[in-house]
Image (cartoon, rainbow, N blue to C red; front, side, top):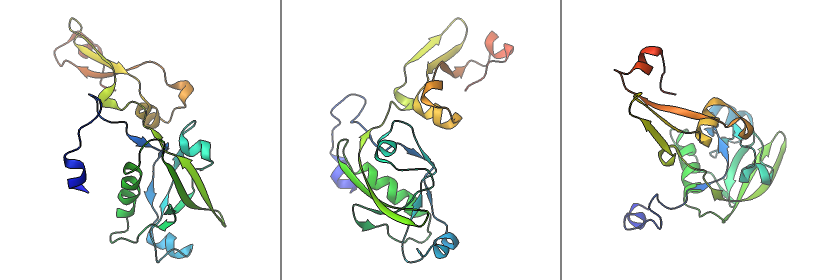
Length: 180
């Protein structure tokens, strides 16, 4: 996999679009929980949050859904079991925006397949527009989706800017302005 990507040249200056399904807080299912729900022979991840207006939300995925397979292939069992979360993330990253992705999920007592279309990840932190105020000694950047996830805000509440740098010797530092 490394050699397949080593010679890849991005098509844009900021890199190629990042595949995204619109979930946050994905965690490996604990071994005891897996045993309790009859999944001791395979890996599984639980989706904590499905983001509004993302591909997962549009396809009907819900928070607390347990993903047990991708495109019909069971998630492998790893030691340590938490590695399955990384495996799940990598399977998403191997897709291209626009690809179909079938997730087999357990919701309560029911098992179903949810097919979604992989989207393009919203602007990440490193691509956020920034402004540095030299005279005041601080930098602000635009508010991005990652900020909303961290702060558990909805898209409607995604307003304002984030302070991303404060000069230690500045008046704004002495006044109490802090990063974040």
